[in-house]
Length: 231
Ligand SMILES: *Cc1c(COP(=O)(O)O)cnc(C)c1O
Image 1 (cartoon, rainbow, N blue to C red):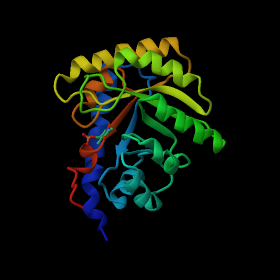
Image 2: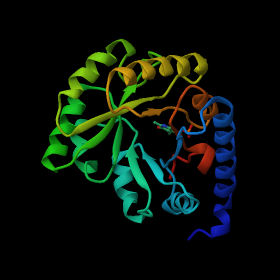
Image 3: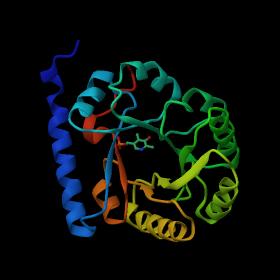
Image 4: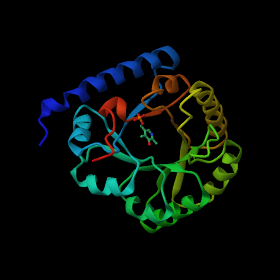
């Protein structure tokens, strides 16, 4: 068992994150803007995740289906869970009824499977289109030039609602890519109804991402410390 004092670093980390978010918002955004903080849970123990929830975190981000399924039962159920990792179509069935949004939709094929299972389960799934803004081979996401076509195709499907865009920009030169994402988001959200989410910003760039219009920052190491993949 973890002693609760051992988790006090999370309180301090979250205090700093909230402070920096508030500063960036005061500087660059309107007071009415809502910017959510998501706690990214990969490799993090349920006690630590629940500590963050007890401090007011109401949104958790999951990367891996298997890991999520193995931990979900121990989660404080008051937080909303969204899927943010690369998702194989054959795994959608495991999460369709337990997450409120799938942020990582980058192909029609994945959208079709989410649609099929959402309809089957009598629900509507919120999704974001993941954009590969840096054009990196190593990353998932639709190319900016193909985004409109993907949105058009996804809009034809029942059981899904496209709420906006998500991105993981290249680690360096991040500013340029954050700016491009803002342009892309402004463009699509002005043309398509119902978009209200730009999921952008991680530990190293969340303040900058807020400057460029993010409505949802996804924080892992900044909140929980360095990830230990050996466990
Ligand atoms: C791991 C991860 C994050 C959080 O990254 P940190 O740098 O630890 O804050 C955010 N988004 C996605 C999609 C991730 O996989």
